[in-house]
Length: 88
Image (cartoon, rainbow, N blue to C red; front, side, top):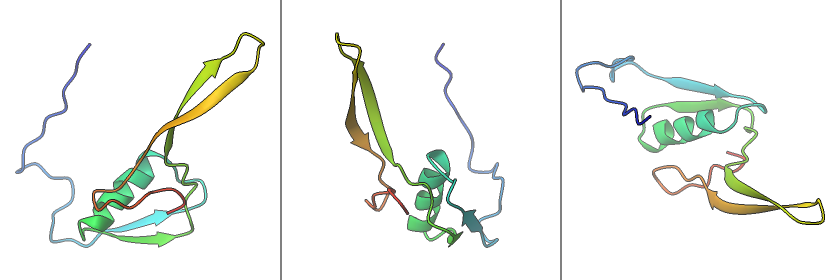
C-alpha cells in the first residue's frame, strides 16, 4: 500500500510567528532528532535539554551461516544543514 502524505500551506499546526522550543533528553532518538535538527537548521526552534540518544545511523543486519550476525552501517541521518545528528 502506497500512502502519500499531503498537506497544504494554509493548514499548519503551529503558527510560524509563534516561538518553538524542543526539549530533548537522553532517551530522545530517531524521528525526534531528525525533526529537532530540521527545525533548528531552519531557525524555527530552539533545542534545549540533554544530549539525545543520537544513534542517527541506518543499519542492516545480515545473518551468517555460523549463527552469528553482521551489523553494517549503510547510512546516517543528516539535518537539512548537513549536521550529523549522532549525539546532537
